[in-house]
Image (cartoon, rainbow, N blue to C red; front, side, top):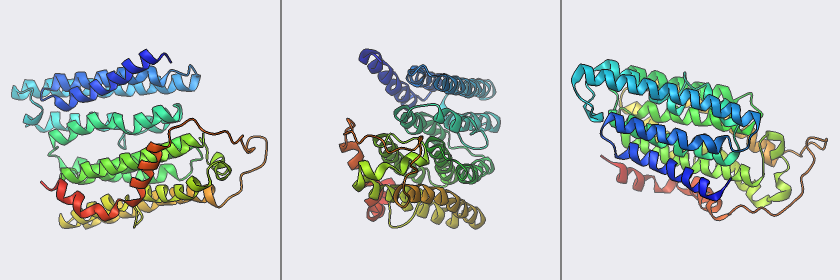
Length: 348
């Protein structure tokens, strides 16, 4: 892609998210989300592959549907209450519709079906943008409206953690596994949103760090299936030995960074007398942990299949920058001791 066009599109991505962040009026927030969607579409379809075009079309249709729902709900809210302000949402109907529209935007279950399909059709770089940056603007709106309907949030959260765990069990494609991992993590964030928005933000940030690291590892190995992972030890033995730690951090095992948000969320749910919800969430984390363990096992403890489709690739030196990978990997593994500092910073 032409570097000037790429720069304009990346600027559009940044602009759309910033407009949504800065807006207090629903029309402006909607406009930011639309700019965001329109900027990523050429990036998604840049490879002119039927799979990429299909993924782009699916993404466009779901995002357009969500944006239309958002616009409809904000107009309804203005009609009912005479207010366009994001933080002045009083009527339960528009709040519920907007919550569902934003859930569709970020890919929460039960409106998640587009996410694995879309992510599977993209290359790893655009997949990384979709899994991290594109979640920021809708999350800013969800945090601002602070939905009052607690039941719908808990249902969305629990469904997402369960489907995110179950869906990833039978997958062999890494991008689909990462999509289900994303759904499960978003479920955890939504569960605790009404009780502690700052904890949701902390979970979002740790999820970003771990996902960034995972995508960069797969990109360095040019890996898209579990079988390809098994050849990585010939290319980067040290990274191959660290990758299981990144994956187990995504799964939420102590003493890794990913344990921090899960621990704090379970503690918060227990404080709110939601012991059953906390138990179901903790059990669903085991489902996710299983497929992270499966990836770790394939990567470090198996020999690659030596057939035509799984031949060991040439060990060419990668052109990818290794500093972002090094920083994000260190953060994904070592940040648990900073938990008290993180909670103090995010305390209301």
